[in-house]
Length: 602
Image 1: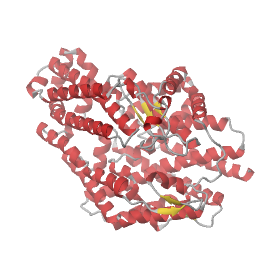
Image 2: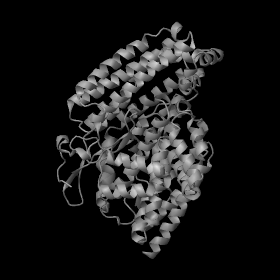
Image 3: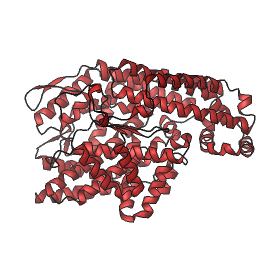
C-alpha cells in the first residue's frame, strides 16, 4: 500500500464506484436537476380541491410524485457519492448542497398535500381506491400517512413545521462544525515515540494500542479537550433535546421518544423492553469485564483498556480479494441468488474500495433505485475491514432486493430494520470463520472480535439509549441540562454498565459530548435491537436451513410494505418481546465461557 494517499484523479478506475452509470457528465446531471425543480413546483401547485376530489386526481398526484422521487433519488445519489470521495472538490460540494436544497423544498411543498390526504375520511379514501384501482399500488404510502392522523396538523401548520426542519438542524450542524472543523485536536506521543495528533478517526485505534501509556495518554488528552468546551456541548445537546420535544408536543405526543419511534411504526414498548432486558442480563457484561481484566493481566482495568484486544492479532494481512472470497463463501447459506447479486456487486464497481486524499472516512451503503447500491469503503487489510465489507454489502443487498420488489415508496425500509441485514451478514461470516479455524490463538482472536461487537453494540448502544431517554425526560420535566448534570448521569450509567471490576475514570463523564448519534433523535437503540434480531435470524438460518432462508429473503424483499415489527415477525423474530435480546446476551455469555476455556489452553 502506498505510503501517501492517492489524489482522487490517480485512483484506478476499477477501485472506484461507477457513478458514470448515473450521469456521464455534470451537464447531464444539471439538466435533470433543473427538470426536478420544475416538477417540485408543479407538485407544490396542486390545490386541495383537486387532489382530494377523486381517485383519479389522487392517482395523478402520486404518479407525478413518484417520478419526482425517482429523479431526486438519482440526482442525490450522484451528487452525494461524488462529493464524498473528493470532499475538497468545490464543484461536487456545491452540487450536493444544491440537491439538499431541492430535497428540502420538495418536503416543504408536499407537506400540505400529506395533511390533506391524512384528513380525508375513511370512506373517501376507500372510494378513491374503487374509482382508480391503480392507486392501490401507492396504498402503503397513503396508509402510512393516515396512520399518523392523530398527530398531523392543519395543512398550513404542516408546511410551517416542514420549513422549520432545515432551521432546526442548525444545532446538529453547529455540533458538527465544532467537532470536525473548529476543534483543536491534541497531540500525544505514539508507540514509536513520534508525535501523533488525535482525531475522531484515530482515537479508538489509539485505545487499541498494546502500550498502556499510549492508551492512557490518548484517553486523557482527548477528553480534556471536550471538558474544555463542556458548557458549549451541554448547551448544544440541550438545544437538540428541546427541539425534539417541541416537535413531539406539536404533534401531540407525550414524549420525544414516543414521537421518534412512532415515526418508524415501532411501539414504545420495544425501547423499554430493550433497556429492561439488558439490565436483567448485566451480569454477562460484568463477567466480560472481569475476563478482560484477567487476560490483559492488569491490576486495575480502566476505561482506556476496554478497546484493546484481549489477545494479540492472529489473522495477519487480509487482502481485499481474500475478503471478497470469504464473504461469498460465508453467505452461500443464503442461496445462489443472494451470492449471484453479491458477486455482481463485487465485479461491477458497486464499491469504492480504498482511501484517497479528501475521501470521507468510515464506510456506508447507499441505495439507488434506478441503478444499484453504492458502497463506500476505506479498506485497511485487516479483520475489521473484512467484517465492515460484509456489513455494508448486507445493507446493499437489502436495498437491492427492496428496490427490485417494490415501487420507490415501498422500497425505503424503515430505519428500525436498517441494521438487521448488515449485522446478520457479520454473524454468518463469524460462524464461517470460526468453523474453519482450528488454530486456538486465531480462534481466540475471532471470539475477541465477536465479544467486542456484543459489548459495543448491545450494551454500549443500550447505555446510549438509556442516556437519551433520561436526558429527554429531564427536558420534558422542565429541568435544565447543565454540563455537570449530564456528566454525573453519564458517569453513573458507566458505573452501572461496567461493573465493579472496572475503574470508571472521571474523564469518561464527558464522553457523551463526542457521540454525534445523540443528535439523531433516538437513533442508537436501533443498533442494539437490530443486532439482537440479526443474531436470532442468523441462528435460524444456520439451524433450520431453507425455510429460514426463504423467510429471511422475503424480509429483505419486503421494503416497508409492512411495519418493521411485522416484517421481522414474518421472518421469525418478535422484537416486541424481550426474548431476542435476552437470547443474544445468553449467546454472549457462552462466548465468554469459551474464551475462558481457550485462554487456559493457549
